[in-house]
Length: 572
Image (cartoon, rainbow, N blue to C red):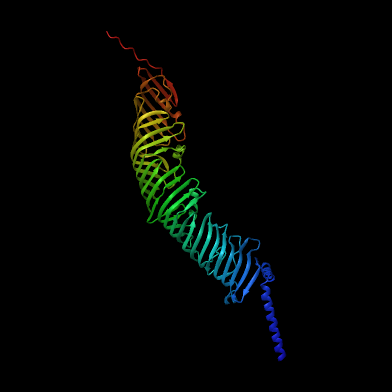
């Protein structure tokens, strides 16, 4: 019995020595190499670390130094200088589920090509880690990441698992090319639902704070978002800048406040922007609101050739559309003011009043082409109920027919300026007059026009201007059909004989002042030349009584010889 006891004692000592030896060897480079070799040979993963550490002061913790982990043949998922794994009795039944995991001083790379981490833990903590998530819908890169996730049950495509509470901070972060710093995010995950109870960051030299949640269908609900002192420059157009919002299933904005923001892109900019937005839901290219409001003002707003100073917008949003309570702005040296409604039913914009005062506006070089282009689908029609213009300067520098009108005043009623997404004068009445004007290098004084438009025609009941020492007066009718058949009747008294030459009429073989009468018709078509359609007759008599009659047929002119007035009958 004593011999058996001795044998068992020596056997236990040998086993203990072997265990101690293995314990010591596993904490050497040889042990680390043996463990990594076994994993790399018998699994689809690749792992490397310098050594394994265990201390009796923390008996439930294993520490790996200089760890690299990933899928064979793919970029590394994890690179860390220190990985601390806290063990518990659960390892007896679930070896890959740790009590705690601490990742320090390294990088997590999560993309479709990298491996999902095979471990789980009741708690995952990060200290001074970097985080990269390329080739996904959220191109994310973060540095100096600290925080924790509990519990941490990662799945393929879900690095935080499908049920967890998290709190993370980052010294710097870039999300879809937008940089941020001092980032803090707190929230929880429940299946496909994500709640961000608090998020904040320093963005574009300003700050952002708020809270939001994502629904199971992928739609986002922002309860509160505040942006302060943002200074952002982008290389994207305005449409491209906001495009990511249209890719979301939905985006509901309960409360958004912007203070003193400056944003700039290649063809747009806004400075000193203050904005308050309530209750707006975006879905693709459309929006909805039950009882929303928008209040906005800025120092400057630039979009293409439009440059506004001190714009102010106040509007109410509803299921029926937008009530524009106020829009005012300084524009082109003057002032613009309007109010009205955009109605979702029929995409109709109805402005109650439009006032233009003191503008010095030069028409764009391509204004005629812009006039012919179809407007966006949201603007099927535009009606101005009341229109007023005062002390404006209007200029067109088109070299084929430049013009300029100074001190342009006017008023109008029920003007329908857009129908079927096409600019025009489709209805209403208006009167305009100016102090001085130049039409293709011909100076006139006190030009004036009065017209009335309906679905069939535009009737110009009064068109007049002083030219030289005399007066020109005309009436006209312009058809609303596509060929735009037009009839004009023009009378001149005491005007220069060649007053019409700068406007396209051939020279008249007379001199001095004259009286004239012109009747003309033609088609002002958008696709055909005007001249071949013109038929006209001009009668003109100079101050000496000589009369010339010119007739135009399909743009070709014939001239009758000047008629000499009969000599006066001598007195008896």
